[in-house]
Length: 460
Image (cartoon, rainbow, N blue to C red; front, side):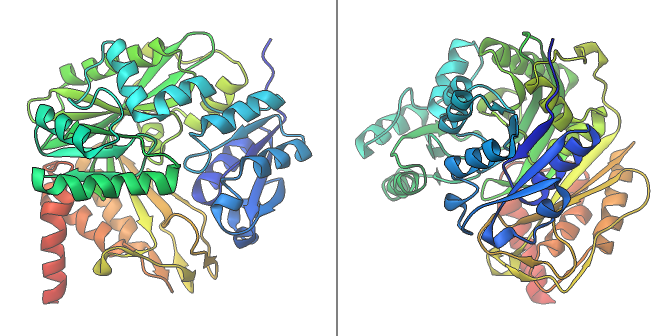
């Protein structure tokens, strides 16, 4: 008989740590926060039942330090660790350490993360499972000569990627043969610096394309279901900015095929917990597997809004060994949800990160279908050491038009004084005709929107 955890350590910070702590409280589970020297006044430390200091400000010495996190878990008596996203969430060595000391990692096994976390291994695993992948290298690419051979086979434009990368790190888009040498060595140097290896792979860029991801849940009893899809095509530097669920651009027939492929892929590898399978979909609705994220996604609230299913609570129940109570036929999709990411960046200066003291803060509230997830508060000092995202605004309404109207109202109310933010960009995107009419692709933001927006801004 499976038993629910009494105490869970949250190995993260910021809005995702707050999100998980809230879910734990609603489930009657004691929460343990961890914090670096820079985060002793952070909201997650104040909301958790217990809080433990784990080291200096630098994330490598604190939030990315497996020994510090595990020591805190053992000292606190936590039976499980929820990693959130980023930091240690996709580190198979950390998951192995948890397994060795008998602490449950709320996520898939170390073997699955090892197989799917490395993008080249993931490609090979998906090919074996019969899932269509983007044309690209069949093995790691270590030399320029190997890269040139792959490029001859796939053609241009193509992407050079760090096999262990994510969030745009170690990725370079190569338009022509003349650009390959410089960009190949840049990606390799970045991979070495960040991941400690030179494992690169290459794939053809599908263009123009939509970035569509399917949310799946799998338990330890062999059940796998999908919770529909999200369209994450509006991106800057491979970082998502503006996301919608369900995807409006795809036919129901294509969606059903995507769901089938995603569930098949997850079942094939014995996937347990929440995960996301990401695809590129071209203008003819051909789709190609891109990667699998073996963790919760930043944009998971979209799926929660349209399905009414709490993904964090499901993660915790699955980790406790409970079978999924939700059957595929129980999953229904209501209305349209949109999420925008509020970041501490200056878009007028090439998205330069901004840290500092928040002098005034008004977060939008009220009305049906509005959700704000953030860990900032008035007079909080935002540390310069971590990711620039400071919150997410999520709206959910019966129609796309109503969702945009509510999002516009929310952004008008939003005030963050004292630091630079991307609020102006979010407002402009929300009012943009192409965005409202669902007329964009993965490069639209950089190729079309930003040049026009900067020009307009200069005119004013």
